[in-house]
Length: 115
Image (cartoon, rainbow, N blue to C red; front, side, top):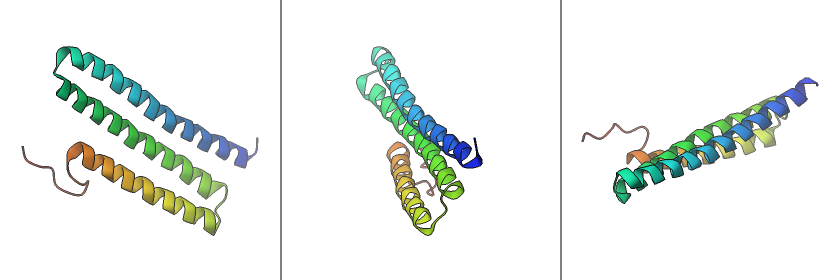
């Protein structure tokens, strides 16, 4: 295997890990939801379920971005591929911020609310 093939394999593994993180997080969320339906009311169980899914989405997006960065920078660092990577990173950052807003009720740069 040459260096390009190794880098491509690493970035493919990163993509697979990102997808696995999201899938396992959603499955774990369903398990927690079913467990919490028995011990808590449905509103609290749903809230925990949503938080679990959003956290797994955020983590999965971060791993997928890492795979894209590795692939773009190491394999094909052309102006067009870097521009596409920049657009992907911007979209994923916006998604991560939106998901953080969904969980915390505030943007990541805002101070936490006092309860």
